[in-house]
Length: 262
Length: 214
Image (cartoon, rainbow over all chains, first blue to last red; front, side, top):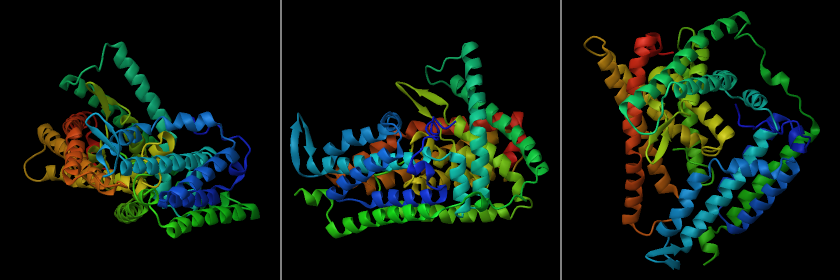
């Protein structure tokens, strides 16, 4: 249940071959460097680097476009409101509404940073199985309790999701329609959620017994699963330099998008 | 109610991660103080997965629909496991659906997770005075669900409005934006409270052991 995130996991690209721990450090650092950027020139460089990384990853363009659909509603709300509500300099009047330059520039900054970060995150998680990424996080110091919870939750999301689908189908077959808000509807949906929780709770008791029988708590540290080579370290060095370049560039130019266009 | 990547300045994102790291550390410390901390992990994990799935249930609020957050119920049932559970759930949502983001993971965990811990303490108050009854459990369930989502909305609106990379036309417009965002979320308080209350009563009837915590 990862919405086709592993659809292109078997492609061959430098990002698919990059060892998971180094890739995690390199691309997360780059993502944070992107979130630091406020200068328009650095935004253009950000677009260039993002496009280059995505092309090198060999993931198809349709893949990122498809995934951009999910979170874009929030962005759409900002795009539709900020130019009217934010800023002082009027660039256009539409009836009683004024469009402000500062609001437009803020939307540009938000949209470019958002799309770039989402694209890099997609390269990070679509070129390594999510299971391996979580193990890499554990190897990098994620607390054992968190890693175990994440791995178990990931394992059961799909099954519990299928349970929900079956129960919703049964409800529809029995005539339940959730067209309007009513106490009856809320109670039925609460019972649906409650049944899912009860099933999961009961399943967890069997899972715990099975885990104990398999020696849970005595497994070796997962660091041994990862083996890096010289190329992984060099690639990490390149990405850390790119990230440092973005931060340094933004500090040196020192302009927000608004100041630059004044 | 997830803040996406690209909106907040890095200082706020870093602050969110610092706060999340501190609360996660404290939660894990509390979990490790249990007699057998490993025993709770499968239960907390499967309930995390279940909450993740239950959040896909859409509630009709014409002309649209809202999805459940249930951070209040999660806090009431999981206690200190709730914060790591929410962090994991938000990570999966960011990676699988693109809801929220990686740079904002810390701040989103604060928005959802701290009220969940608050809900845990609110729900525990039901054990004070008098004997147990479904009505009492339901009332505290409503309180836990509504307060948790209310506090989440307050933190979300506060962070969003004060950290947009631009200034509003005037203080009045900023106030109006805050009120509009807050009022738009008001029905969610009632719905989350009611659903949490109904769920608590259902769980009490079907599997009361769940309400004793993980």
